[in-house]
Length: 206
Image 1: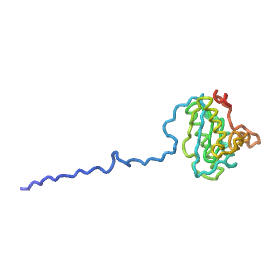
Image 2: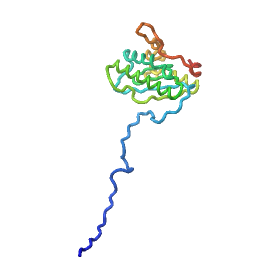
Image 3: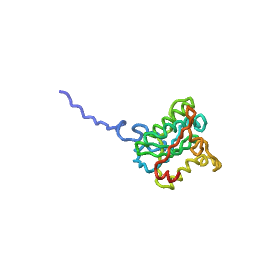
Image 4: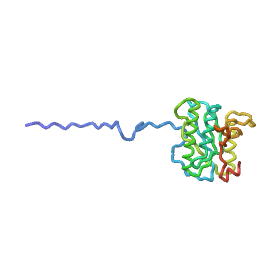
């Protein structure tokens, strides 16, 4: 007759995989400063101040060769999908825009198309490939005449804001410069880069 084995007490060890614990799951990406939450709805009566950040490896945008490509992108992409480009300033590592958009979808599609044109132009002028914009655009709606005036002044005088340049200096890489808002076509004619504003706030200010 077999003898019954004495039951052995099993040691319960904590699980070392799965579940909620510190460090589990997919690593989080470092924040770039622009929220990736769903963007709010946009009312067309409000202009917007838009900022694009440029990737560090792209280098300085403020060269004549690169600016001509950016200017061309503005000419052909600044009035599409319900987006209208009103003012701009191209700085070394970022771009400021004053725009109008019919609605949220027009803002998103218009800026996406414009960004693609700018990126392709910069890469072509630089003989490079790869991404140009560092992240999604940042957009701030302008809801009062005071906000509109301040935003336009900030955009057009952005070089002075960063460098302390003479306030009377006209930045040639901004829409403050008269020649910067005209694009020379292949047939020798010039076409405007900017679009006439439709919103009451911008028509009252400009």
